[in-house]
Amino acid sequence: MTLVDDPIHSERTRDALTAAHLYYMQDLTMDAIAQELHTSRSSISRLLSHARASGLVDIQIRSPLDAPSLLEKEIQNRFQVSAHVVPVPDGASDVDRLERVGLSVARILGQYFDSNMTMGIAWGSTMSAISRYVTPKQTHNSQIVQLNGAGNMRTTGIAYASEILRRFGDAYGAHVQQFPVPAFFDDPATKQALWRERSVSRLLEIQGRMDVALFGLGSPFSEVPSHVYAGGYLEPADYDSLSRSGVVGDVATVFFRADGQADGIPLNDRSSGPEFSVLRRTPRRICVVSGSSKVKSLRGALAAELITDLYLDEGTARGLLSAD
Image (cartoon, rainbow, N blue to C red):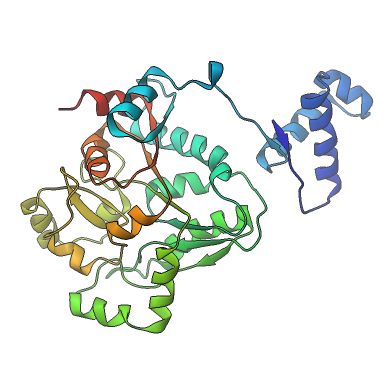
């Protein structure tokens, strides 16, 4: 447990900090703190909740001897990634799994991101879930960059993607670099021409020197439809093309097959997402997955060597290890 400074020196923040010190550092009960601060026990409970939610208190749970679980060890040994399995009941729906995994990642994400760093984020259902719960951490000279465009024939996508990015930017005090281009171009030549524009190439350069990339996996098989499959981004002809190409999923609207290969998939020529070579150059690549219906996509992403740190629920972890 670590106490960090809050930039807003409000009376509530000061009271929350005092309550947190007494509760976490001095082991006083809430009743004792209430008596010391001349308030009620319920008020102390609310102050402690505020301290956790605002980032004044950072609670870390470590397994015995800091050892990974058996599931985590097996995933690490088999796939050479750092695995983190989030406890979720077997009977939970994919919607509940997404929320619980997203919340768990949001609470610890700050350990990967600090001042003078750049984090790339791919919009989508998983990133939206994480963004709602990110624990604040003040940084300086840091930035959040959007990894792929969000526009289509129905919407510019700006409202959806920018809200996700804004939450991360606000949480970390980071500058947000939006990527206002379509998710998919009509013509690959149009994409290549726009990529030569200085305003766009500047963003591509920022993506090329990211310290952290945070992404979920798109999947046509998921109970919780990936936004790219449910948001009007693909036409019937696109689905036919993906099926013929043997696609099992995507990262930032760049599609791949079960063996991790992305070459020769026509839709990738029109995608605004970063090439996998760009992602692989990023030192820390955090993939967040929930729901056993995404196991095929996850195995493909692992085969593509896109992941350094994997966060997933127990059911998905078991499905990953038992899949052929």
